[in-house]
Image (cartoon, rainbow, N blue to C red; front, side, top):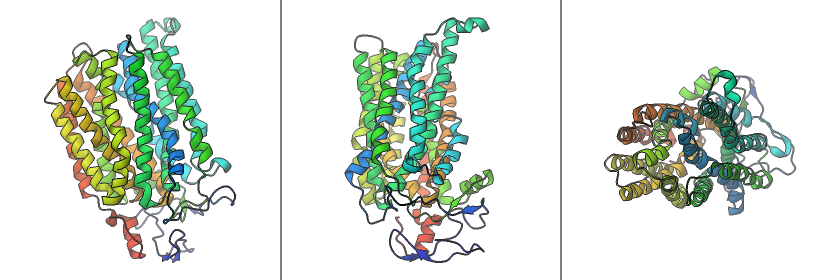
Length: 487
């Protein structure tokens, strides 16, 4: 749809369906939106890039696998940052609060950076690299370099003596710096990569494509944990080879995505792009009640996930007195039960409804958190973690596709960034609060952890249950134009 000089709506041809539709000129921000200057969408010349993705076009398995290849490398990164880094930090004597912050894949700076990067990627075009892959090519190698450097800076001695710091304090500061830098650069890359899903797949197939995408991530997490478990069979886990392996795998598995995916010249359904101000970001957050409910769910959900996930290694070693191998095995069970069902659950979400699968996932996670507060028996904890893994698979397979059904296609980068901003606030808050509740490594209190997580997961069910896709501004606009709306 286009707008005339007075901003009034007028019918245009829907490129995906061939039908005429009438959509609001405010494109998802609600009545009275007074955003930055509206500019024509950037449509590069024809050539190697397809014009768009018709709604009726099926996404070939090969294309879904090429896109998801990078997420295998991202999964390797996530498992490394969430679990393996904790082993290094515990060896340095880092207390739970700082460990949780450094192990968080949702860093504090992401609350500001991610929305800017997301909206920037919506309206940029870098030739062969398109909108999103430009960020992958630029920032993935930087992140990989800092990952590879982490174990080496931990072994540097003498630098801090100039400032009166001990060798161990110097190591903690340097490791914290490299962790911050590889997390920062990874997050800049990952949101445009995530937004690419909506660019290359029709709405009705995003559940199954996201299922493959998330299965690749979970498989990458399982793969690096298997390697870590094997390396730790004879004693303490060697950190240096693991860090180098993670850096190499992160780079290698993004190559098929960069070379194999051709981004569409026209974003599917895109009409105009906005140059957003801070006021516009605020209006985007409060402009649609259904999006607000989605973000409220994400805030509570990630608050709870962060509270448990980044304490898991410390819990296994300090409370259960597991070896490195046993602690990694606990994480492996959680990730394996996430990896196996995530793709079938994505397909099922397309058939019976994404919100139903999402609700199922959060309910399972809530039940597992309640059960975890009642026992420290290892066998029972393995079963509880397996249930939590299936629940995590369900919410992972359905959460992002649900967002793509609530907001306009040309604003996916913006809203993906805003979603990450919400979780980038919730994650560190969960990490800090849970770390304070646990206490110190000398006198930990992990029995306080599971009840907190259970309350947060149960609370996240309330906004999720209230979400109605057909009541979103996009849903209402499509209904007014006579287009189908996914309930």
